[in-house]
Length: 189
Image 1 (tube, one colour):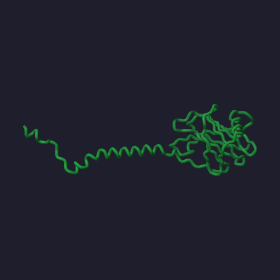
Image 2 (cartoon, rainbow, N blue to C red):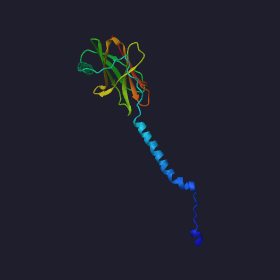
Image 3 (tube, rainbow, N blue to C red):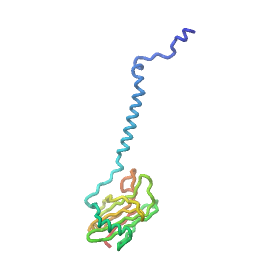
């Protein structure tokens, strides 16, 4: 019996196992930590999608205080302005959109007003513009929630009429400008 107690029942390890086995688990843990860190950093710095830059066809500039006052009056329904109802392109969404606009000098002052439900998390409503005769839609401005619904304002040169107006639902998972909700145009008539 004494011999059985003295006998070691565990198998003997070879020299390679004694030298490398204690380093395998910590090395595996370090690799996992590095991988998870790389994933975390790549998600934090990921672009939300490639959006085409504005071309020289539609010039976007800062709106002056006088232009902003004119746009605010149109949004409030004050003064003489024209209205163009945008055609609904998506049957899955219940809502309405219109463009209120006015001409003054060589400029068009326009408000895009949309009565839409709140977008889902990670999505937003975006306005795209297209100069008359052009096939390329240019990203203009995101619709912002206001007292009268979602609102976007812009000023453009009257010489670029007709100006196409498009309202889209944007998200990180879809290409820019793909999910068209409403479409219409601003014309001189």
